[in-house]
Length: 286
Ligand SMILES: Nc1ncnc2c1ncn2[C@@H]1O[C@H](COP(=O)(O)OP(=O)(O)O)[C@@H](O)[C@H]1O
Ligand SMILES: [Mg+2]
Image (cartoon, rainbow, N blue to C red):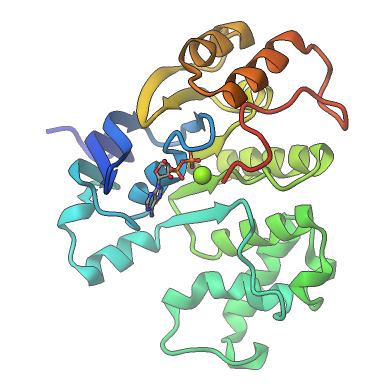
């Protein structure tokens, strides 16, 4: 038996998930070691969100197993699952903040599992947690916005608040589901760099889904490609060329939209920016 220091943080074995007739994931096998920064790359509908939701214990497999931090999620009882989920933080494309609450209160909600009962208003949170939340806001560069309503912030700022909220869980694992799909290129860069920086400083293990090839190649340590619920690529990001990635997706594109997007992407050599090459999936990516 391996010691815990060398066990993978995430082990996915033979994971299959069906939603009725839809095969969202098919026999996915994946191991993620401590401190790895993994990109899940795939077109819209390829199963990225479903995979991340299994790692966060939000879905039960149709078949197979998901082990996180040494515990098999499908086997866990609700209380143990809640405890484990406390060590796994997640951020989302649409940030999922409470718009009418202050930035600080939104960050504090990341500590809800650490307090008993609901909280109504800032003053009802322990001072120690408020101080902690402020340090996380400082880390994401938003201390000065602590007392603004969340909906007064830009998209990029809201995602940084969501990162601060995730940190409030003191997580071991950070899952990010298309965290920059709603952001402009400049804000995307800020958010992606911030995630990397924090992951390195805190020794976090990160799995982040993206549908933009350029962003994935420039950001992750390792690229895992999903297509129609299957892993079609699992390789270090360094040395991987865009053409190689596009080859994989080009070969498997099944719809006209996918092909058009991929062809544009292959032909484009424009830098990222307002007129940047389109992403693998169109704007409707979920
Ligand atoms: N709750 C659900 N009920 C039914 N079908 C779903 C559900 N969640 C996902 N799917 C289907 O599973 C497939 C994978 O979806 P998803 O994981 O959201 O892909 P991605 O995040 O890569 O866009 C899609 O065909 C999607 O329609
Ligand atoms: Mg998705």
